[in-house]
Length: 146
Image 1: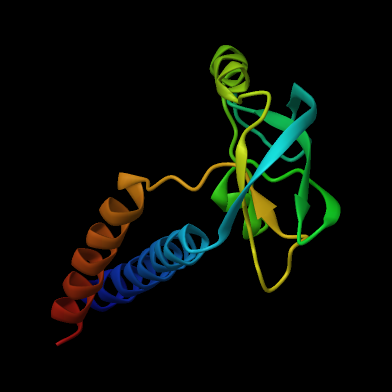
Image 2: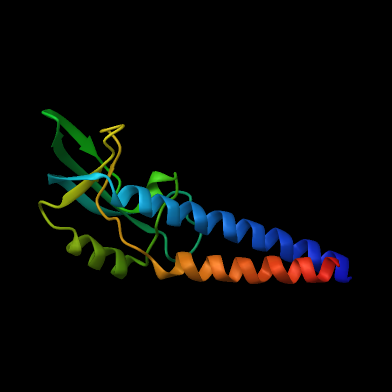
């Protein structure tokens, strides 16, 4: 039984470490991107078709920005969207978040690929909490295996 527990803890720890490091490294990378003014073209709260919980509302935001003289459009609001994920909310929380999006936000633009942009680049303490939990789980798994 200890062997199975060890393997399970190693897997959970490894996945947690990998996911949190991806988000932490993305945050550090995006923080260095150029910030440019943008204009919101549209914004609304919508249901995410793949979400299966009560927190299934997302922000659908479209904005335009100019980078190196070229007019571009973007729709990414949160960092996790750059990785292909999404951030869901309960409907009331989504409506509050939508009101927080200013009419002319500064967006972070990837200088290597100006079509890649995001509105918010905020540090999230959960990235570090998940990393620490992953490390403890991984060490627990190693201890169970020896």
